[in-house]
View (cartoon, rainbow, N blue to C red):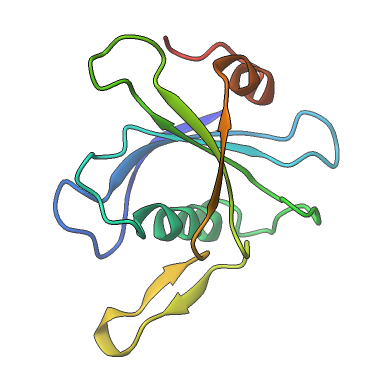
Length: 134
């Protein structure tokens, strides 16, 4: 597992960071799992699509598996009151090839707006092969 704090490019101070845990594919041909957590509450809607693009570009430079969903990107949103595990979503992006979007000086790298599927804590533990923080 690879565990680090990712500081995003071009984000406002304090808004562009997240904890990223990358779990390698368990079996040949499986997709790696990325667990993204500790996202700031005050973030723009496009932050996760830019963050995912930066992680794919920086951490998977040698390429991704040739699968319909080559990275299993899980977003964790902690419980607001600190009770329970919070919410987990599996994000599916329109593309897994980072591309630039925007005009002029505001061009940013993106994977596009994701679709979200809720996951249970048990499903996350199965995908990552480890117990999640409760």
